[in-house]
Amino acid sequence: MKFTDEAKIEVVAGKGGDGCLSFRREKYIPEGGPNGGDGGDGGSVYLEADSNLNTLVDFRYKRLFRAKHGEHGKGSECTGKKGEDLIIKVPVGTLVYDVETEECLIDFVKPKQKHLVARGGIHGLGNVHFKSSTNRAPRRITKGTLGESRILRLELQVLADVGLLGLPNAGKSTFLRAVSAARPKVAAYPFTTISPNLGVVSIELDRHFVIADIPGLIAGAADGVGLGIKFLKHLSRTRLLLHLVDIAPLDSNPVQDFITISREVEKYSSELAARERWLVFNKVDLLPADELAAHCEAIVEKLNWQGRVFQISSLSGQGCKELSYQIMQYLEQKS
Image (cartoon, rainbow, N blue to C red):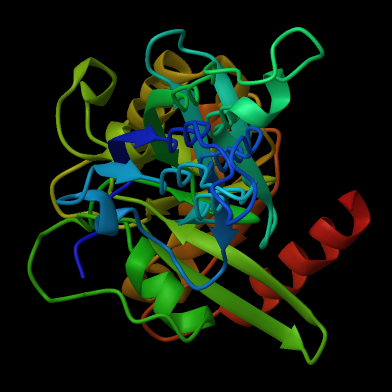
């Protein structure tokens, strides 16, 4: 299924039904009074968060959503039927903006969360409401009002506790496969993830957290180069960032790799750049054991890194379990 994280839709609430102009027509009552009923209210449009959805792909082709109109009133003081409300399901993590005002209407952070985005029109009144001692046969009614209409921009930000940062081929997808049941694509040739992936890491029966793997960043990402910057917003809800660095790249420098990503994150959001981040050296199985510690220390010293440092191999699983436990402990302490 194609991952879609932005969509624009138009929502139109139903029109209220018109009031009815009617008079009693019964045998032996030659001059019956007014008996026109009211119309029904128009249906409203709601958005509701659904935990079973994880993409906005349903809005790629259907972009106009209309609620039902209220029915017109009838004789014998019969009220028209109310228009049926329309409930549109969206993924948890969806932000909803009014395109015209750029106002954020709602941030869906919980399943079953519901929000009114277009109110239905008000019903019209039948002529029975306008009879009086001086006007025994009113021919006046009111028409139902139009329902609200809006153009909305939906923006999905996936909900995850931990986000992965790194260049393409830093091993983020392999790490996600190693610690969770998620199965993002990995291969023995250079390529990058093209859409976010989520994985649930279970430590014990009731202890787990969610990791988000986004497309790798490259130099110039903040200026629109590559895919990663488009998906950085998915890290905005995370509480912890893991910055994966290939410890033994064939054609690049680990120090420069780290600096490149850090600069792009800073350009995108100073708030995201200031979030708790751990440095994770990946692919440590590619270096001789007697050289590993000195190599890692040299990189940490050049970066003047003061945060936490871990050494793992996503492919072999070395250090992944220990890192997962440390993440769980950190999240529990911060919750």
